[in-house]
Length: 282
Image (tube, rainbow, N blue to C red; front, side, top):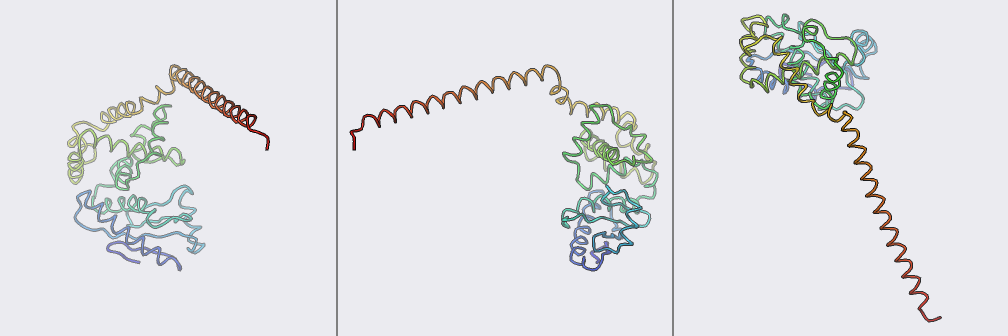
């Protein structure tokens, strides 16, 4: 099933689903190129893995992909494989399609792409998929609070294999790029992407942001800690006793309200009893 530069390979019975996926992928392709300032469309093939897929195909990819991964890209072959989760709509797959398409598009458009740090490649894919949300925030918060953040240098060549650690690496990558944009503006990002056509990554980063990645990482970590400053406050001893006091006061309010309602009920029942006793016998 083809839509623009995107071809979707599907099993029998998935034609309608594949048509919708192809249209979404083609639209995401156009948006990504516009956002990154790229002129030329890049051919991409997407393999849909669904319950209708041949058993041999599903078994092959179950060996090649960790069970927790919903999809993956092989940029050198301009190839993407995505798993269709039970009940997942084509629209629900759009962020994943955008993520993997970003890898394919950048690899084809930037000759030096393979030399970029992996955290930057994944951060860009997260940026274009627009998936940084509550789960990533909570993951990052917990890692920052308990000192489990990965140094970016460790994420330059390989991401962790374990699901929880890999998700943290993705969250860090996206957060670092969000920090750069918040601090320096989108214009600096455009400079970085332009400089990456003629320079290695570290030189291009210095031209764009006026500092190396190590210095920027230190600023980002302080930024992250400031954003999370409310969490230690909520977990301090003072906050604990304040919460206990508030719960105690709330209990008093509830008890007084309950007592008032009970008194009103008793008074109403007494009035009704007196009214019945004052009535003449029938």
